[in-house]
Image (cartoon, rainbow, N blue to C red):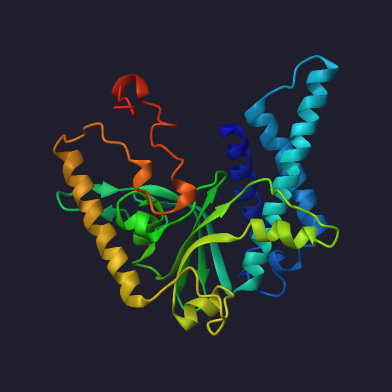
Length: 298
């Protein structure tokens, strides 16, 4: 449910802030990012999950059955959150991460400036995570508890602008290394008796997105520039073209909104390029259905 997604999101945010609280660069040998054991990670996440579960889900109820159900759900959420936190720590350890910004605001009083557009309109927002990498690069990460995948063609078509807008917000301070979703989901592992369950769980929690095919940026993210795996890499010219396309789309969106052009035209899922995204409909989670009265069947 949405509540569980909020729990995962808040637990990972607080977990990251706690491991960063020593003030050391994340790649420093003495940093908690480097020294925390899996057992310590599980203990931190269990504590944070208890707190967030109570905040978002409320009391379990008076009966033994209700309490047992709540305990089961909380333990299940904690297991998934622990797996995600372990994966997060390995992502940080695998690269050359100097610093991490959690819940970074761009705009007034934010860590990064607002995005200015023609007509004086400023775009402001908040980024789940910005990893500051060796060499002045930045990696943008957004936490997702659903099955959505990042697709550069979808972004170029105007359906996935979020990560690219975040990237634009930090571009004055850092060079882009890539944009990624970190999908937090309970893994489903098929075990034939010889399966490395822990490795498969981590694989399910890997970052999904696109990286700039620059040796310095890839190395800073812990990716071998000479490795055979080329999926998810984009050359500099292609990357620049995508950023230019998204910038033009953003200007058009702002222009239409400021001129009062707000017709009901939700994204058509069948046009999306990525198969995992095609079962999503913009109307599914919209809070304004009662106002819009848009009928997807028509």
